[in-house]
Length: 125
Image (tube, rainbow, N blue to C red):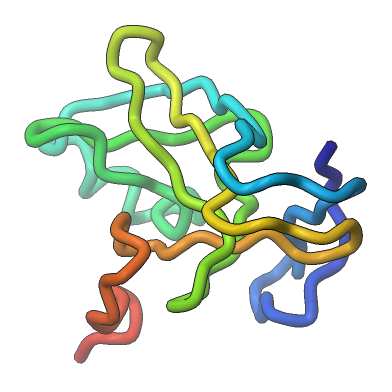
């Protein structure tokens, strides 16, 4: 259903993104990414590494590193996918927010809410 390919949207070291292999219907589960969580007081250690660019908020007192394809979705303020945190299963569940055509890059809003247009943390002064 999804694959990793080179993304023209990414300007990072690896330039990867998640793409649809087939047409995907709105609401369809795209991926379940297992989580490695850690207390927020440990985040200053993570900030000294490349992983800081990939950490997600995980509840009030924790942050998380996502496994699988979870850390490879690129950002858009007009996303075609969204995610829910499943604390019981310790996963992030990625869903199609709109119909997605085969070959399209699958994009999420890094702010967590599909309608949130606030500047991203790494774009703020």
